[in-house]
Length: 370
Image 1 (cartoon, rainbow, N blue to C red):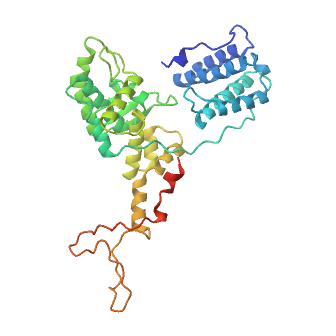
Image 2 (cartoon, rainbow, N blue to C red):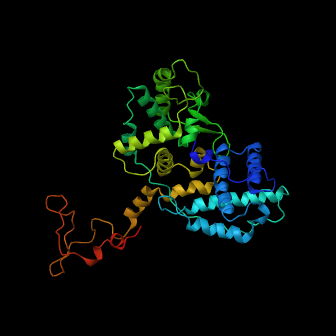
Image 3 (tube, helix red, strand yellow):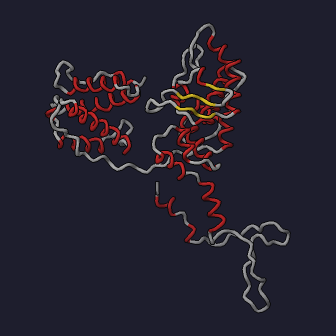
């Protein structure tokens, strides 16, 4: 568990009208209404930050929070810098403010507050960010090859990576898999209580299922010993593998494979979606596999499937390299430059290096475009 999740909520919890007591009541309400544990934990952290900010300004009661204060807090998040000097991402600012708006709206509904100071707050405009770079098929195979299947740990890691690559599961969804969630005959995986506490069935390839079967037969019994657990992926002590352990392992494999692209487990999720779309899969099927509620979330992957767009560009752009079909120039006509593919021996001639053309300068590189 992240250290931030263990910190107590700041303030005096004995004051029933205080922000601290109201936040504890709100989090308890979320738990009793079956919000995901991760959602409740993140709300606890983000709203505790707001409480600390209020207490620094001697504001401890919800009724003393005004619309102007909420606007000041929004500006505070805009100018906030993390320890490494990096500002909060726009998406993070929006998440923090959304949590704040939901909390105050809940207080009004519960008749704990008469006026909602965050009701008219406008969230920052979302950035249209593309997913991180996906791996190519050859890069995936290079990463998978780093797991040594001759050892129990290597065989376990290979089975996990094959599962992530085949199904596109989130890291926590894969680590939460239990033995009964695998269906070898139907080649499906049951994801229990995924994001939004929703179950879904996801298809899994025969290759990934074969690695899972090998892991279950050879590696898992050796790792468990006399310990009994329903979880599929376990450590040497028989416990469920943790998210940090898996991410560290995947990053190590990426480095050893010479893949410099950022990311870890989620990189396989991006890769699965991108490669399947490039292979002709309908975006609605990708949406079902990824467990996205909104199709718009999945459609962002259509912006990074560059393969077909590159094929169209090469086929239709007027500056493409093509063999001329016009008749050869006759005597007296102005000589046309020889085509690079029309060398006497049939091989492409190496173009000569003439004087530098000022139009060939890489302006993006010189201008420092991010």
